[in-house]
Image 1 (cartoon, rainbow, N blue to C red):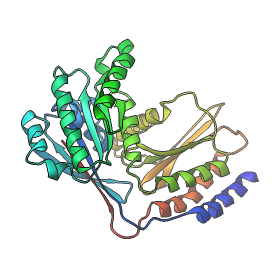
Image 2: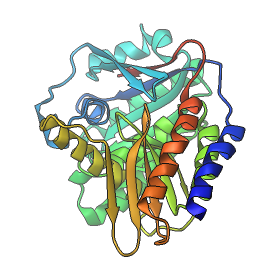
Image 3: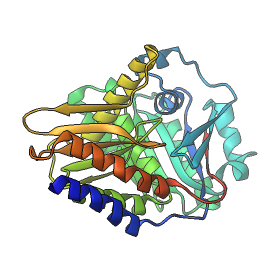
Image 4: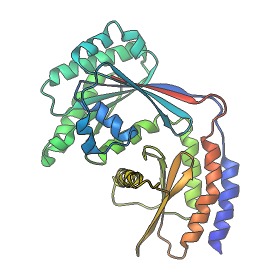
Length: 334
C-alpha cells in the first residue's frame, strides 16, 4: 500500500534533514501600553487559559506582577506585567530607562482603539520609540490596536487603516507591524502567533521538516500548535484554502474545548473530523506541540494517517531539543 510506503519515507527522510540547534537564545520582549489598554487580559487569555468573559474580573495591575511561562519546552518567558498608570510610565522613560529598554528584541505596544487620550497615548509611544532607538535599535516593533470589537463593524477597516498609517509614520525610522485585536474573536490569536513566531530560534528548520512531512503523506495542509497556548507556530499548505483566518479560529475553538474537558477532569488527547470533502486529524505530536493534518484523498484511510503522525513524532521531538541551558525569553509587560 502506498500509504505504508509513505510512512516509511517519513522515518528516513526527516531524519536526514534534521538539524539540532545547540546554542541557547535569549530575547527580551517588552509589552507596553496605558493602563486599561488590555495587556493583562491578553496575557491571561493566551498564557493563563482564561476565556474572554472571565477577564472582566481582572483589576488594573498595580506595581509589578511577575510570572514564568514555559513555551515550546526550551523557551521560558519571564512575564513582567506592570501597571500602565501615568506615574509608572513616566518612570520608565526617566529613572528606569536604561534598565527597561536595553537589549530589547521585540517591542509590543497596545493601544485602546477607543481611548479618549489618543494624543497622550501617542506621546508615550514616541517616548518609548526614542528609548528603543537609543538602547535597542534593532528591536522589532509591533502595535496592537486593541478592543476593535467596540467599533462598529462597518467602520473597523477604515479606523484601523488610519491608525496604522499614523503609527507607521510615527515609528520611522523603525519599521512597525500593526494588528487589529479583540479578546472576543480570533484576531488576538493571529497577532500573538505572528509575534511568537519571531521568537522561535529554529523556526526555519521546523518549517522545512513540516513541509517534508506534508508532502510525503500527501496532506492538503499541516499545522503545528504550541501545546499550552494553542498558538499556531508553523504550517504548510499544498492547496489553497478559502478562509484566511482558519488557523486562529481553530486555535480558539480547540483551546475552549480543552478548557471544557479540564472542567470535567478529562484531558484532551486527539480528535478526528470527517465529511465528504476532507478529514481533519488533531493529535498530540511532541511533548510541546499538537499537530493538525488535513487530508482530502479518500483512498488514504485514517489508520495510515495516524501511523504517519506517530512515526514523525520522534523526529520533531529531536528538532525541539536544545543542548545546554534552556532558552530564556524575558517578557517585561509595562
